Amino acid sequence: MAYTVKNWEPQIELTRLLAALAEEIVAATPEDLHLASVLANRSVAAAAKEVRELIATASGDQDEPDLGLPLAEAARRREHCARQH
Amino acid sequence: MERFSESSLRGIVTVDNTAVDIARAIHSLSNSDLVRLKALALLWTRGLASWLGWADVLHEAIARALDGSRRWPPGVSIVAFLSGIMRSICDDQWRRARRELEVLVRADDLGEPGMLGEEAEFSPDPERMLAAAQALSAVNQMFALDPSALKVIAGLTDGLTAQEIQQRYGMSEREYDTVRKRMRRALLRAGLEWRTP
Image (cartoon, rainbow over all chains, first blue to last red; front, side):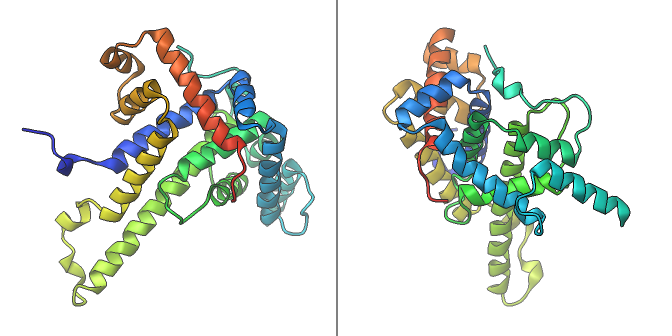
């Protein structure tokens, strides 16, 4: 039987492809990053800064009174607080 | 063939990880890992149309990791762990959109909830199909100037192994690895460029 577009399942194909590409990103070496940085004409440090800020916001949302608290300390305090209740 | 670089193994522990371990690992992420995370967030949000941006998904993943609701399995790098959470968030978005569509279908169905039969439940969701097709097209477009990368993409899309892709397209292992390196750099480049969250 001929393969027709009726059998096409793009969502399954997309899931497979994204999973494979995510593995590639995780496996990237520092050399890959350096060359990508040259191609993008933007330093790794500059790009990392916006992600670091986003993480700071995300962790701040978790612990409202201590926006500047380091993440590890914030988590330790949350665990301590949870044990007491 | 390499699977994990030395840097991707950073942050791996071999005992159960607590929320404190997760927070410490996130706080200690190197600049390289942070760029990897952004590239992963951009990747996972492809196909979500305009529901969520990369920053929304990464923000939510960090929040879920820190609240202790997700277990960080031993032997998994913190970057891979957060990538898994982002994938899960995007899958949830797909499911939510599908449920909303089903509710709309039921509402149009003269108020008879039982009318949505099994066949309809498992029939392809046209909206998701379209979004997925557009996302596949966007990934292909990313590698449009690299015919060898497009071959690898086609193979990965079909669920082929590295060896099967090499056989299908007559690539040597070295050629295949070179193509994968170019693909990685293209994916990382996306994470390095300015993007509005």
